[in-house]
Image (cartoon, rainbow, N blue to C red; front, side, top):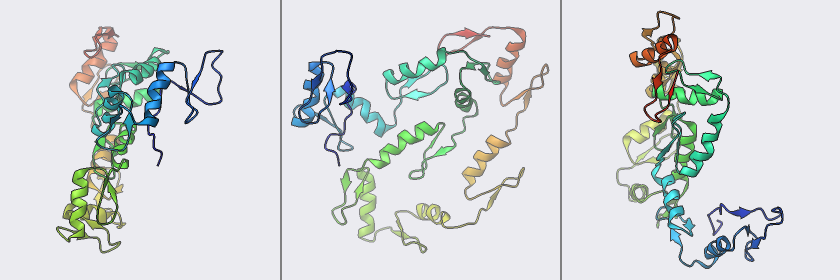
Length: 284
């Protein structure tokens, strides 16, 4: 495993010139930096002096700010929200970079609230806010997310293992996971899968696991006949594919899932200004 799990934002690729700028190169790893103070900070990674260590994994950082930003990977905290599409970010810098995409020409409009977007993918991501459907599920803990990118970030929590078991050497992602794992060694509250022998710490976990071996799909959609292994997957399918839109516009026959969405849409016909509470902007 690489001893230095930190990417330096100011680092310059080893073989890339910087238009005559003075370069400060680290003699130990070859990375180059624009500023000497950035090099000095980077070198602490090699010496181990004045570093900030993550309590959840083996990563280390030269500033407390970098550690705080990294900790959001473990907590799944994303406090910076884009007021245009609702996408959330762990730090303000990434949000600022993302916001640039909204300055381009907007040809894609949301039927629910009238907001416009420069890319179709951004419109589709925005529309998830109206449905509230979290269709991206973590296969390790079951937590659900609106966006695939959020699920991908969340999975980092499971991949960073720093709690080793004294019995077998296996590493777990948290202390609670380690304690649950240790119960399997002493035979306490262990449920084993008859198909593959996998041990589960709860009967509910075992039942979920055994479903993965079965081809039985007992949950049937009453509208299209499609079958599913899990009820939650069926519910998500019904909401996405057969959504019951009860609020219909009398002027164009479009229908919506809520009265507020219908009212916002009708403003497009009347030319009434719409106020977006989150960002304070107004639009038609």
